[in-house]
Image (cartoon, rainbow, N blue to C red):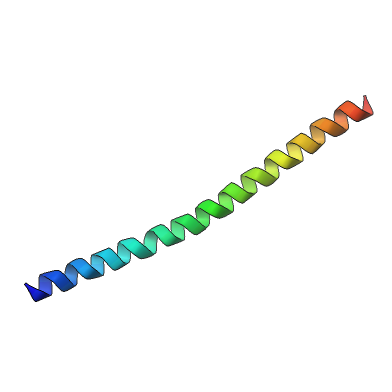
Length: 51
């Protein structure tokens, strides 16, 4: 029983580590998406002002 519990604990640790990495990559993707949107809005405003 102890070995099985230890194995389950290891699996849980691995699952806990993987989401953290995906969360970090998710944050990076979200930040990049926001930057792209900001640049697009700025470009649209510039176009309106130039016209």
